[in-house]
Length: 69
Image 1 (spheres, helix red, strand yellow):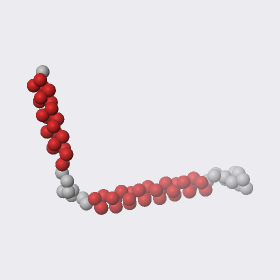
Image 2 (cartoon, helix red, strand yellow):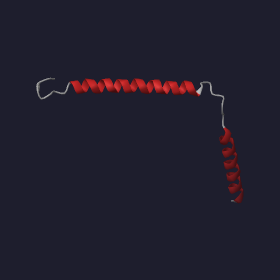
Image 3 (tube, helix red, strand yellow):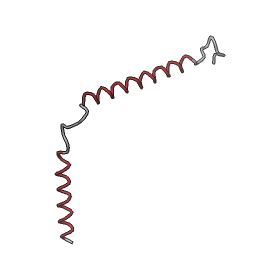
Image 4 (spheres, one colour):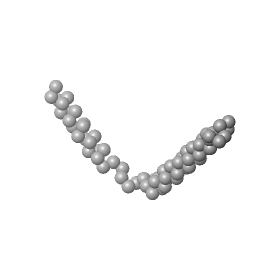
């Protein structure tokens, strides 16, 4: 049983060592481009949500025109 415990510790330590430094700095897409893309998508989604909310709010009837659609 102790050999299994030893092998478990050795494998766990080796996996932790390999995953610690990973692949750093060799990204094919720079971080700034990724951030710009995320900001662009967030802006589009926010604008779409705002326009849908404004359209929804304009369809609510007022007290002066209660039969509006």
